[in-house]
Length: 488
Image (spheres, rainbow, N blue to C red):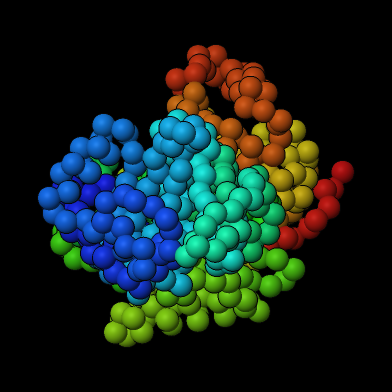
């Protein structure tokens, strides 16, 4: 979605509506109707809207609860048109409209503005929106149908004293709310992002910023998946988080990466622009795909033969944008919600530190050996099948793993099975474990079942175990298979 926002104008901003409706190129579609309202020009379709009329129109819209908003392209900081809806007393329906200034037409504003308008209507309890126009306005009809409108009925009227055929289109306003149920492929993921997500952020004061990065370092906070979908916005950090969520939903393997100009944990350059870009790779049939949406200039899906090729080419692009400054690439594994840019940067630093100090694998017997404390072979099999990528242990009893730790996983007979690397470590109270985390263990069908079985197990180790007991939730990945069969 374009980086646009709907701005309900203040009275002094009505100059733009006056300008639009006095432009014959913009209003030509409106010519030729036999109507008698004030200021209408039959030949040009223009409507006079002098300053003395602004105040009455402003009051009327408030009194009748009519919605009228300018479409602002926040990237170029310009109004490009307007959208509106109002109640038709005669037909008992809400009629809507979109008008794009002539010089901005053909750039995709109508579709994105309509989507935002429909969402506003839904938020205000309006079930259906309608619009009417000539049937031969094929581009307009396609725009409305592409957004989700349907042809409700056909009609006709007089234009320049000739009968013209028209259509009435309508949409149920909940149809334009983000719907992830139909996403099946990486192309669907990109289309979803293009139709629903703008580049933007919500600050610590809950103020929406679209395409504007002023005070980003001071005020930014990461969003939850729910907030990204509700506000239709996200920075590269949030958008990659959302794409990771969507790809996981359809079981497509993916990895999240950050490329950046390195900054230490204690950086205080809060007035500078951000020097980080996050992106996502996914892996299908031995090929690597980069889905790019946050970077407006490179939106698309790019195919690579290997992960190394993808990382190299993507990073080279951002090194050039940085004036040749070296940029480390770091794989990251989660984005906590409601944290600042500085906190996210420090998380990436922590991962870099772990990777730089990781064990270099030379011989299997040099690695620390580890396995599960219960149902050992059953759980090892789940790891081998790719179903188990996490485990939980007691914080006060078990040693705390570190991100980047590399271990040899063994079966119950101490046979080497595979080498695993710790991707993430979460220390929290047992009651805070969500189903999103618990299902990574691959053992249970519900959070209730997971909690019941883990409570029984932990109470055998610690009789004082309860919901408030701290646990270690460790996420890992297999980096090398040594033996894909359990020795019995």
